[in-house]
Each structure stands twice: as structure tokens, then as C-alpha cells.
Image (cartoon, rainbow, N blue to C red; front, side):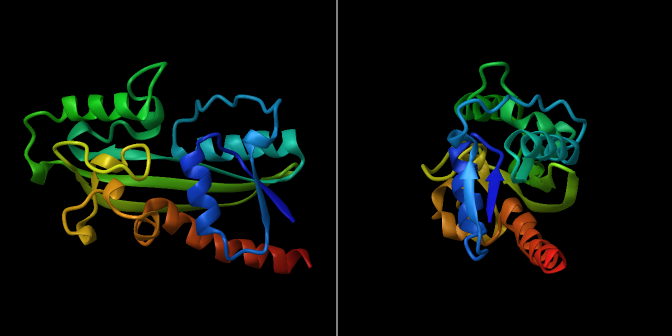
Length: 201
């Protein structure tokens, strides 16, 4: 069986494949489809965006499709960047620009008031429609500066309480995957997927 992972983000693709490696499935990414469409993420929630991407790419590729939408919500900013996490710094956003903007907006705010959480919603779809969705979140704080070379997105700023003051970008992927929002959403995904496959038999 093949499943299309609907992302062009190489970091996400690597993480998802690693987290789902126990499933007896062949995973393919959007980079294997030269004519894959661009799906506008115009939903009002992570779930709406994940569902939209899963459906559109399932109908495009004809494969079972896993799509996810994720981001970071900062308490002191009223939940921003939220669903705009990937494009927080504008049209030509990059991880560096997004992190710089977040640090600028949090300038002068004390560590104890820099609470944040990562959120992830995963959707699985076929051509016929959505099969199921799962969700995961991970609490933490925003650091005062970027640290670490691993991970992607806001990982160089995200401090998880179990990591002894290290950011997600300062620990190996295997360690991040013990705690991350994506790992939690995909752990539930594995159980639901196995149940789905049993029903299909």
C-alpha cells in the first residue's frame, strides 16, 4: 500500500516517515509529483486546513493521503501565530524570518510569560472523502534567542520542560519525537489506521 504525504516541507516529511515507520506502508511525498497543485490553506483552523489538503491531494493523486497542519500558539500574543505560523513574516516567509518576527514581538516579555504550545492536526483521506483526523499538542515556552541546528520551523525557539533547558533544535530528532505535537497526533493516527485497515479486510 502507498500513502501520499501531502507536504513539500522536507523536515515534516522526514519526521512523519520516521514516526510512522512501524506501519507496513510505502510513503511518497509531493516532490514525486511534478504537476502537484498548490492548495491554499485558507481554513480558519488547523483541522480545516489539514482536511482540505488531504481531500484535494487524494483526488489529485488517487492515493490514500495524509495531510497535516500545524503551528505554534503563543499565550502572550493571544494565540498568534497560530494557523499563520508558516507564513507569519509575510509572503516570502522563511523559518529565520518567522523566528525573528516572533522574537521581536516578544521582546521585553519575561520567560515565565512566554508560554506557548505546538499544535498538530493530521487528516487521512481517499478520493471518496475524509477517513479520520487526529490531533496532538505540546506545551512549552519561547526562548530568548534561537538555539540549535536541528529541526525546522520554530524548533530553535521552543523549550520543552522535559529537555532541561534545551530547544527542540538542540536535541536529536528521536528525542524531539518523544514529546512533539506531531508525534502525539501520529501515535493516535497509527492506532486509527490499523483499525481502518482491519475494517477494510
